[in-house]
Structures are given as C-alpha cells and as structure tokens.
Length: 236
Image (tube, rainbow, N blue to C red; front, side, top):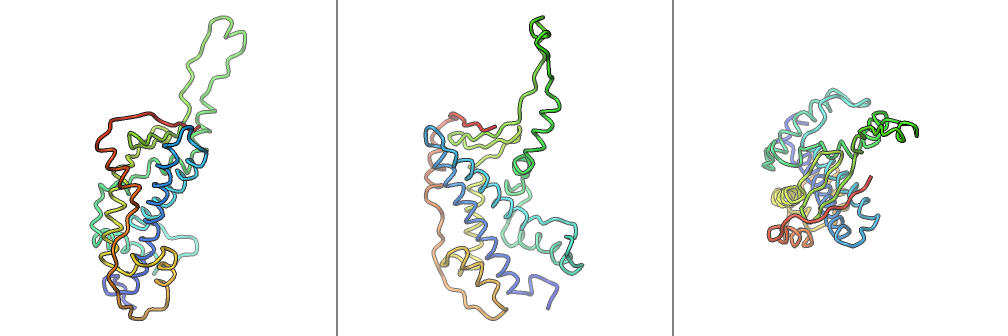
C-alpha cells in the first residue's frame, strides 16, 4: 500500500464518497431547518434540524481539517495518513482556509452549550428581597442564546454567528466538485454509495450522473438576494 493518497484511488473513493454523504445530509438538514423556521409559530423540530445541520457540518469540517493528535486506539500509521488526508482533500476540492466550513465557533458553542450555561449561572448575582426593596438592582449578564434568523440568513450560538447563505453555497459547491471527481456518488442514495465505497479495493468504472442539489435551499438563497433582514427565532 502506498503512503501517498494521490497514488491510492480506492482511498480517494472512500474519502470522497463519505464526504459526499455528510455534505448531502448537511444540506438536507439545512433545507429542513429553513422550512421549519419559516413556520409560525416555529415548531420544536426546528431545533432538531438545527442540531443535525451543525452535526453534519462538523463531520464535513473534520474530514477536511482533521484533528492532529492520535486517537486513543489509533496507530502511528493512521495518524500519518490523517495528517496527509486534510491537505489532499482540500487541494483537489479547492477548499480554502477562508471557507465557512472551517469556522467552528458556532458548532463549539452548540456542542458545549452546557458549559456556557455553567458560566452564566456562576456569574449571575443572587440578590435578596431586602436588596431589591432597597433599590439595589444588580446588573444581570445576558444569558447564552441560540438564535435562528432565516430571513437574514444567520444562526447564532452564545454570541458567535454563522452565515447560512455562505454555508449553503459552499456545501453545494463542495458536493458538485465531489461529484465531478467521483461521479458514481451522484447516482446512488447517500448511505448506499458510502457502503459500496468501502468494499475491498477493485476497479470501479465511474459513470456520468447529473448533480443533485436541494432545490429548496436554492430557492431560499435566491430569495435572500432580494430581501432584507427579518425577524429572529430564539431558543434558550
């Protein structure tokens, strides 16, 4: 086995197929989030879509910018391969370090929201009734919030913002690029394509298939270009 990913077509197929799977699911979750958040009142399902979207975007991000340390059950060979995987995939997929896929503030804020609550709780003063009656009103710190503003095209977690429009465009561009390099992933359901990609290495003849992007997201993006900022939906 070569230790160079560029000389290993099977490894490339595996990485690209799984990356396509997670990219599709990130787009599907974003599409569902947009649909839920445009409903009045906003249903609780919007926050499920919110978490799903951040989860799959996180998978895409970690595939392109993998962790540098060795996992508890990892090997030195696996770590060496992983350090090469990120730069290789970013190069062939033309992903820049300025890509919104690299931004982790919102994802980290959501994944570690309990820690934000801890910090807010310990910083919150506990005035007594007597202090309130005496006119002593302490300054209360703002609670950490999760906010969806679909019309403005942003989500916010604990003060960190993510532009959904930029993210949608970049995810769609990434999926199209993957399908150009590995056309077979476009014609199969996401999980089936990912499963087949892990079959033992043997030649697979790629075939042409049209790229499929969620039309709901594209319609929403088109609408964003013609509307101004709107209202927001909050969740504590």
